[in-house]
Length: 320
Ligand SMILES: Cc1ncc(C[n+]2csc(CCOP(=O)(O)OP(=O)(O)O)c2C)c(N)n1
Image 1: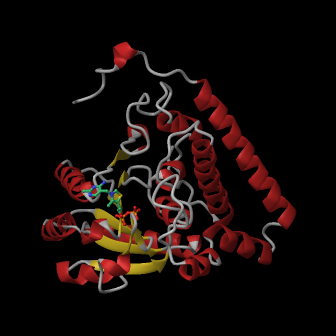
Image 2: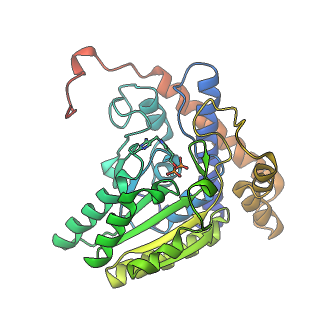
């Protein structure tokens, strides 16, 4: 069952973030070693993804983008099957045919990953229309970046969802980067959420590195979508700590800006808060981290042991 019943508490959120970080670091190390194809990681954005997904219900649906590990793992995806998918193996969630950029896990309500930047925006609007027409209870959570928010499809999708009163929680993960371009070069304002007003929609920005703040904001936003049957634009303000994809030397990144964000690493913040409040000792936090890493090592071994699909399967389960 997808995570959120009961609502994950601070400790559970911390563990989920550790899992996402360990998963991404497995990809970073595996790609450096030539074992795993390089891909886009969400290091630094764990609180933004985990916090929002923790606020969703089992019947809610998710559409996401190329930086989707936190959404999938927080929803309950198995890291071994995700790694197998990224590595093109038969035991991957899409039998190794999607890689990380198109993965879907229908059993968990993750309808699709779009690598067409902004593609998920219009598709989420369409999925929400079908939810409404069929009288289904789940709302649709749509994750996208600040770069996608600068594309025309953002306007069309949000405008239509507002006019037709569709149950979509649009979640902009404003991680300051759009591939190799800083968002300051494509946006005059710092925040995407303020655009909601122009659609007659509610919007809010939350500190995307504070997992509890994200969970609270997402619970409130999702409740408004659920109760009012209308869209909401939530912006999680965060930072992409690593490059656009692996490998990427980040030579184009402003070192001072990166250092300032790294000092607010979401996992360090959550760990410190748990220790200061007495909920967790430093030794217990270290042990938890080791357990999560061991689990990821086993997940990688599982993925490596999974065979490649047979050549005869090349044209099955695909449209084109
Ligand atoms: C329509 C389209 N244009 C360009 C690209 C190449 N591209 C892939 S990711 C990316 C940056 C997207 O930035 P953002 O939406 O902020 O997401 P982030 O990568 O920061 O998570 C670009 C330009 C693409 N995949 N699709």
